[in-house]
Image (cartoon, rainbow, N blue to C red; front, side):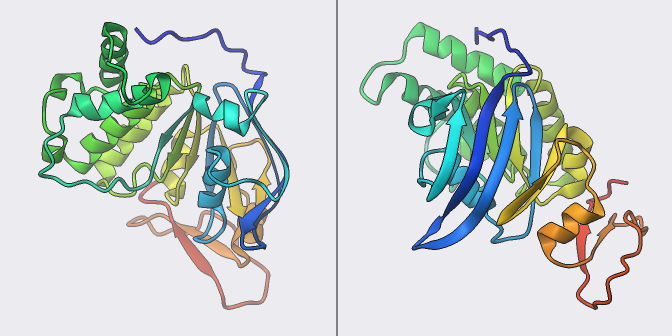
Length: 274
């Protein structure tokens, strides 16, 4: 069984202070400050090129900060990143490659034991529990190439859970699935949040606002107030233009009329969420 530690929700699991990061001396993230507490469920939205992927790379230790400090469970990223389970946006897959659901999920154990060591009975029990948590245990012997996009995403979440992380970091987890499966995945993440801290990046503003606990907007700088409300000021600061939120199929204005005199108004879809 996956062992769940006793968590104190007032303890920060991610602490970012005055972070600057980028590539080839060009800053992509500027003066980022963020504290994520245990069992929080943080959603970050923002335009393409706003630094969301860069922030993920910093948290995973794939990109060193130019300035500032990042701590994971009070440790330097090089040590603390082993407590993060990562679910990437797109996983390239050869549908004909003969690998089962269980074998994919079991890859999550590699970081705990190395490439050349055999899996133990304990490893197999942890993997089975991870698959059970995402409702994929009954399909553990199925080739992953035969699954739907939503089912594969559940398997990739199970792979992250198999590492027994304290933090789940997800990049656009519903980008390639239909709306019904998208809802199912968000409901799954809501259940997992009972014992795992979640930091999620998405363009699906409406969907994440129904499930997350706090939300922020990231566009080089982070606009985050430890609350769930998406304010007009946050969106305008992040997107650099007035924003109208529109529910597809249910036309209505979510935010009040902007008074700024500009024709450059951007719309962000709510995917049917009011």
